[in-house]
Image (cartoon, rainbow, N blue to C red):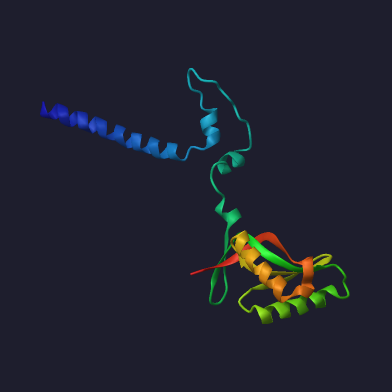
Length: 167
């Protein structure tokens, strides 16, 4: 009788291991696999698509949404956020100088804000700040409009990849 119990336990143990493996496999089953699974008494849908699409569905692509950068002292992560567009001009003769002049003005008044002057043909653009919420950007935009009324209605909030310091 004792040997029968031992034999049953020995036969049951591998079955339990396989059951654990099946549970862990099911946790990573994506939506396409669930839809393509045929179940008796239910409708059947067959999705035909590239295998790479099926792999990406239902799982966030961390590489696409964030990226890490390192400088000498700090590490940054890039995420989707907001910046203030202070200047945008396409006059080749004066826009570059005007963008850098306005950057200097903003840095003097707000040294804590990061500034970005970029050239994307044919535009020179000055963007300010790394804001995670639209409300934060709106608050600073109001301050900038008060400080620099000559910049006028040219300033606006734009969605862009921003850099956030990782501690």
